[in-house]
Image (cartoon, rainbow, N blue to C red; front, side, top):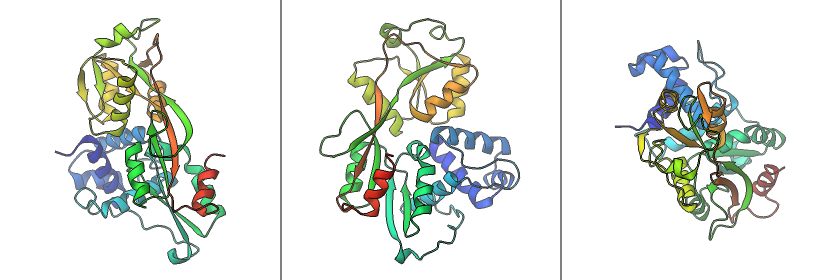
Amino acid sequence: MATSSLRQLDIFAQIVASGNAALCARDLGISVEKVAQDLASLEMRLGYRLFDEISGDLRLTAAGRKTAEAMTLLSQGDPENWSASKADEPEAQPASQDERQSIVLAAPAPVFGRFQEALAAFEAANEDVAITLDLTIHLAEEAAAALREGRVDIAYFYALGEAADLPSRYGWSEQINLYAGNDHPLALKDSVSAQDLATLPMLMMERPNPLRRIIDAALAREGIRTGDPVLETDNMFDVMTILREGAGCFAAFGPLARDLGRLGGIRRLALERSLPAVEVRQAIGSRAADGSAATALADYLFL
């Protein structure tokens, strides 16, 4: 069975292909409400909007178009999951691909969401540069392999400090926080201790999810224990629903944590001891020589 995250990506691919939520729902044999729900869950995980609106004929946002292009490239190596994404053809470029310098930028999708406007500005100012996204890199070991093999030029990744054997520079930190429904007993406490966390039932992302892996590693490094998971899912709509019902708590960082904190019926726990922060780091491949477009882009993203 496909995981929740793959189902959501497949719906995104199908909705890009059809250009209409109702047609997508008909083709997949599900309701329009289910399409909208899964799309909203995916956008919450990514941290940015994919479409300007969900009703009528759909228009991709600039970030949505980049994501569709990245997923189309991914499908070339994984036809089973993205065999016919039929994403919109890229807009005509002022120069042919042979005449343009290609930069492959790898970043977790939520990180891409943070500097999507900067990328667009860099491309607009450098018409001889074409930036391709790789949204499959999340952790240090994945970034190291992709850079070593020459598959990417710049890699952003999640880490718990400087990674061994991977020279990188610190970008920013994203605090891990815990969230629960407003009426959860711990949400009503002025201070939640480590002892409270030790038996706390948890909602968690699926085990292969890189966000789950980095959260687990961060908590383990600090010796922080929580209770067993009562649910493991990448479907954020399910997480929100169960949080509001008071069945457990959920750990998150970055844009996902930001969006959870804004939702009605959900509250960030007042922890006595802060949870670890996850670092976002940037590494550059050896083929990106000083003065190249790749190094210029890497520096520009730090401005």
